[in-house]
Amino acid sequence: MSQHPGRWLRDPRGRRTEIDVSMVPLIEALWDAGFTTVGCCQDLGESIGDVNARKAGYWKGWALLEMPHADAVRLSDVSVASNRFPQHWASDNAWEMTAPLVQVPGFGTLAADLVQVHFPRNQIAALTQVVRELGATP
Image 1 (tube, one colour):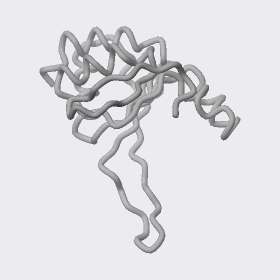
Image 2 (cartoon, one colour):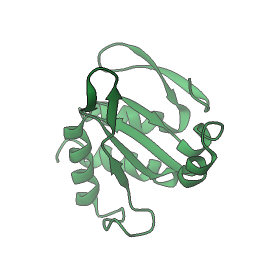
Image 3 (cartoon, one colour):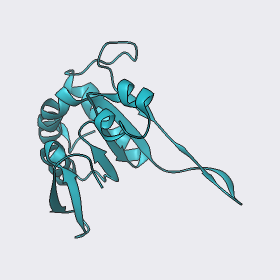
Image 4 (cartoon, helix red, strand yellow):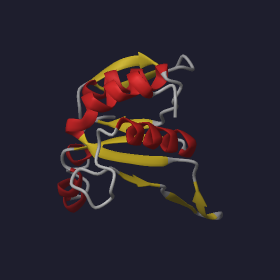
């Protein structure tokens, strides 16, 4: 359950899913361009504030997209092609992408085909526009 106001949408598979209101235009643009999304959050720091204060402070003001590896690479390529976002990892407001490892008792550590894309919340509208303009071409 999200900490943010949500809107119910039908994903490309027809399943109902609740999306944070600020993320709705971006998620719709991504789906229209053929991207798969697994999860999202309009402000990760606000969402995890009660769970981990240190991480909440770090991620305050940062949005999150979770998507399969191939889609995250494609989104990164689209963002680079747009030349609208910082591209050096050390730049202010540069995106951060992580591929989480999942620890499963009895199986060990597994790498999921999932990438978490973190980007400043104030880039949501610009990214939506870029996906609408360039999303169909990596």
